[in-house]
Length: 151
Image (cartoon, rainbow, N blue to C red; front, side, top):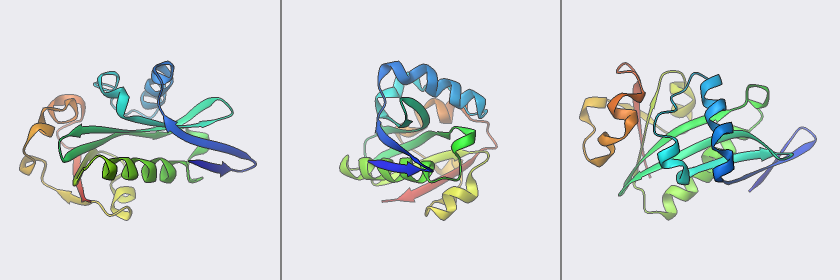
């Protein structure tokens, strides 16, 4: 999937091992958790422009439930459609993998994900293998908003 940002094209693709450090740097710069990212890096998509990774989003699968995590876009590339293209590619991947329920934890993007159809749920009401994710066991603060999207 490609997108045009200004005069330049960007592509959304599967992350490669050599992208890991750049994705971790983007997450750190955005004050987002990095715990567990390397263990689930096979589920990450990146946006690349002129050979540089400018955004990422991850899908951590737990059967028919999955966790959306590590959604980040380089500050200078925000509000240009990069995040929306990454999100659309992630939703397509989730559906092809049989995901029926998508969860996320956020401290800053609640309104963004509400616009994408997510609804707030009580984090304590979430059950199943997804609760073993580092997102639920400590990477995200206990006051993080838990959100759900049924696919």
